[in-house]
Length: 366
Image (cartoon, rainbow, N blue to C red):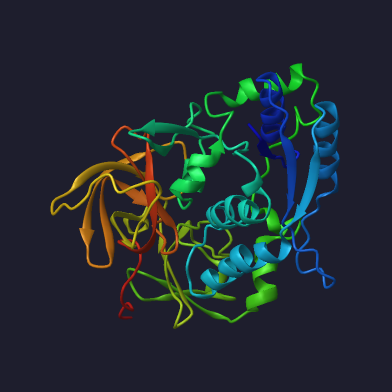
């Protein structure tokens, strides 16, 4: 079996190569360059150290290695999507787009199609049911990454190998240390990869600029502050508003009027909601429900967290609606609702959120 291993230089993907070699395979290692290295410095994703470590791993295990450039594809599919979403007042998820369109999309089309399987360091598993391959959760609930994979396709899942899916993170680091891998004590990556050392707000300002507007208290309609552009703020945000008399929470945005809505208090009810509506829904492998007019019990996530929320899903015009058993903090349009079965074992799919009860639907009367 010919295996392509996507290796980033981090501890997880390095251990993937180690495990594959122990299992008797010699994978071909691919390092994907995605940072935009432009002459004007707009994007800087340093890769030198990553490539050095990946090269060491390839030599240590006798694997062929190739650095593949997907800069332009990444810009078109991920960075462009992120900028457009923020411009429209949405909360993007670039990691989901990267997995679907870059790692398991463009890479597959240009290089991966030559291989039987593609191995990655994602914390996830797969389950075979009636001849179909389903994306499934990992043994480590804290590191599980199925929520970042909620937009990939069934064909992609069927070709993927997740060697770390049955391991806990501390076991992975233990394997790396025992094998003497240089990434053994390397910190996990944080934030958005393509930004490199650039601060998120600085990146957004380069493309969207500044446009001052009002910060309005949702309950009273009173203007309580000013901001430099709604695109710098996210629903659920508490820090970075620069206002006294807090704490203040961002509970909504009006992109057309350039207004940021806030609520005051340590735990205001306006930051919560129980109902989520999606625009359509992407089933990863198949629709397990078929035609139904009532509700189906599910578990779901709207952000990366080890916790699953129980709820019920039903069909509505143009998509699906989820009623949560518990109140949810910071429901933001643009986020993805990632849906699992009742036992949060199988990842069924995901849909972009278009509405939640924490999102104001009309201007507040002053």
